Length: 469
Ligand code: 5AD
Ligand code: SF4
Image (cartoon, rainbow, N blue to C red; front, side, top):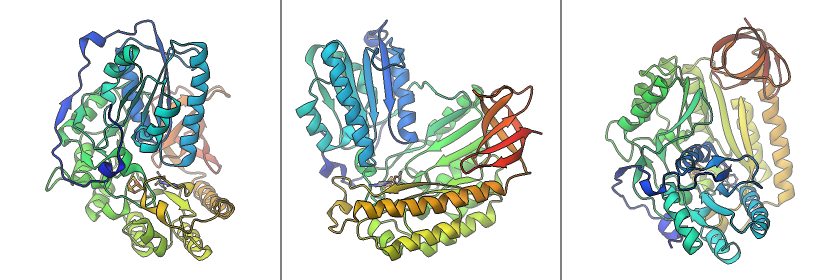
């Protein structure tokens, strides 16, 4: 058994990561033939993409997908730690699994992902959910086959490593979207923002080798993918741990030169965004003019307490540079309200930065205490009613700008990647613009996966309506 340890997770020593190739031991192939699985994913795109790997592994074990968890032979939860409500949802689901297990003792249940990396979660599982088959962290999904098989004989297997091990390349992937693919470029995060649990659950920053990334993208292009999203907690830090003169800007340029029709990337940290990266984005038509740039707060005092490494002024300077260089840029962000000690004046600074940036999209959150993070120790927490009230005012403001920006697009013709057919209306489709806005549109002779010119006829807060030109 390996249990997580936050003290070890916090260590910053430099490690040499060996790249290993994934291979499934022959004895596990089709071991579970005839059995079914239900996989529930919580959280961010990183987890969604991990689930694509996990599904492919389960299929190689012989499992078939089952959409109703009550009927599945294996229930697997790929969990998220970012806020308290993500925890509550996963524990609620474990409670439902417990009832099922009482009725069906053969039911297999596993928990993986970020929550597995938390000391308190593993302690609670050992105490209250010891009937589980396995708990696997974020660093060793590749061990799921061996642990599941072992659990059938020996009961609960807990294998969670506090510090990341080797990089595993060549994991099989069961992609959920036939046109859009996620490609990891960097794992983990070294920023240690004081409210955030990610550096503890995802480990130190580790970049994949550029050759492995470019090879994966080349294969995706051959398979007909139209859009690639480069993934990482902080993509702008790409390469820092691996190369002297090859960073995110160089990687973006190399990916653009593979002629990927659409390239996106998430998430960007303002501190690591360089002029060279802006130049590369501005130069290549196939790098989409859509940037997610979390601001978190507009107050310099709070930004400092959060350990964000920029000020309101330097963030705004970066936004101005981006808007000046990248025509039609759509900017999105993440904002936290109610960080410990946040006053009404601090909150007004956040409202002000929203007015100045006029975001196209924003994810807004109430601060949630994360056990083991530095912000947990700040005594003056903001009462929940105040946090909720600030969130409401903030949401009204961000929604105002979403609609305003969308209204400015009425009458314009935009290129849309067609992703699906409308369930409600014949000859109606949905897809996304280059700026990542959802468009519902009508038109004839359209195939899914087509790029279509769509004239925008109506703007809503979260989507656009249009018709094919
Ligand atoms: N409480 C609330 N929101 C958080 N985020 C990260 N940690 C917390 C927390 N403890 C938000 C940040 C981040 C996004 C992914 O989640 O805004 O950018
Ligand atoms: Fe968390 Fe900050 Fe890293 Fe983002 S940059 S994952 S908020 S520590």
